[in-house]
Length: 85
Figure 1 (cartoon, rainbow, N blue to C red):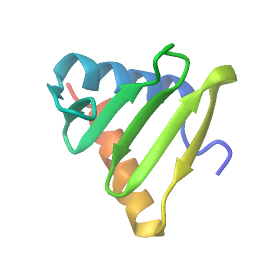
Figure 2 (figure 1 turned 60 degrees about the horizontal axis):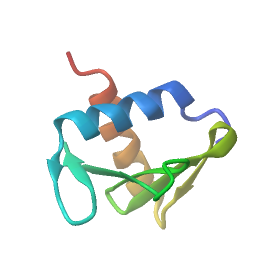
Figure 3 (figure 1 turned 90 degrees about the vertical axis):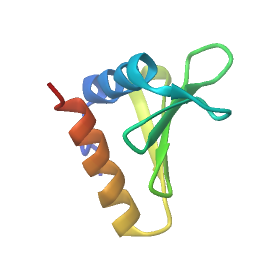
Figure 4 (figure 1 turned 45 degrees about the vertical axis):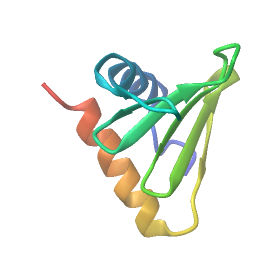
C-alpha cells in the first residue's frame, strides 16, 4: 500500500473539492467525497464511502477503512475527481 496514492494527486483532489464542493458541517463535499483540514492546516482529510484518508506532515498518508470494497470505491472516486476535465 505504500505507493498506492500519489501525494500530488491527493493534494490536487483536495484542492478541487475545496474549490468546487458544497459547504457542509463536516467540510466541503463534492462527488461523494468530503474534504477538510485541521485547525493549523498541516493535516488534510478526505472522507467518503466509509473511508478516511489523512494526509499530513512529510507527505505521509493513512487510509482508515473496515472493508476492502469501501477502499476500492473511495479510491475510484478520488481517481475520477483527479481526472475531471
